[in-house]
Image 1 (cartoon, rainbow, N blue to C red):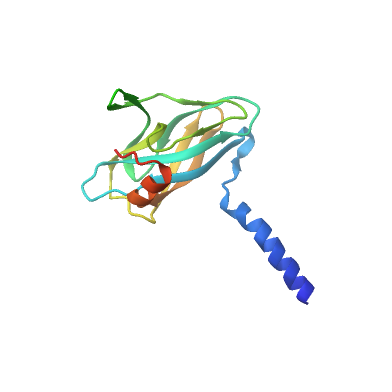
Image 2: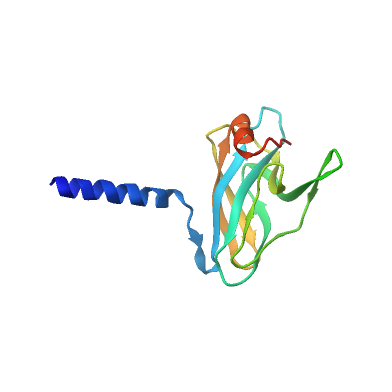
Amino acid sequence: MKLQLATLAIMTSLLAPLSQAQHVHGDSGIQIHQATARATVPGQTSGGAYLTLENHGKINDALLSAQSAAAKSMEIHTMSMEGNVMRMREVARIDIAAGQKVAMEPGKGYHLMLMGLKAPLKAGDKVPVTLTFEKAGKVETTLEVKDSQTANQKQGGHQH
């Protein structure tokens, strides 16, 4: 009996991390993980979302759009610094080469914008999002809303 319990404990500890990783979607090889959004305050009409896209497939793919019932629209943005001025602009797509990944992080390149929020995003909320890829098609994921200060400490301090 003790051996069975020890074996069960070991197996549980080995498999637990797998339950937290998001799975690869379909035959495309697209994997989405670390999908988060920043908490907003009442009256704030837009919010930022960040995630990592990994292409485990054998063909290149591209993120073309995103949508969520939590906002009127979503846009793919890039951020860059020009001197001391931060510039954000909408982009039509994010290319993800086969075998590569693209990490969306605060203050670094790409991110998603939720425009026309229907309600404030509160820490702990789960926000369903549909991502549309050129090859993989529509892929569902969920953003975990994090407190803005916690997100800043972990991811670099950029705010919208």
